[in-house]
Image (tube, rainbow, N blue to C red; front, side):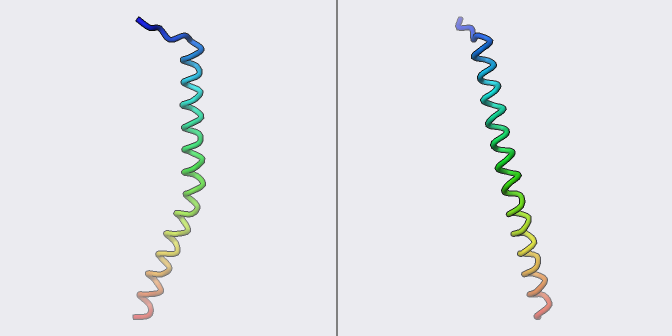
Length: 52
């Protein structure tokens, strides 16, 4: 049976950690834009309800 060396296993763990970090950073950066979009939509709804 094929046995993975500890170096290969460590490299895989590092790769998973890097991918998780990149995904977390992307979600963190996008959260600002999502928050602003939701606020803008709420402001539009409030403005629309006031004009009726």
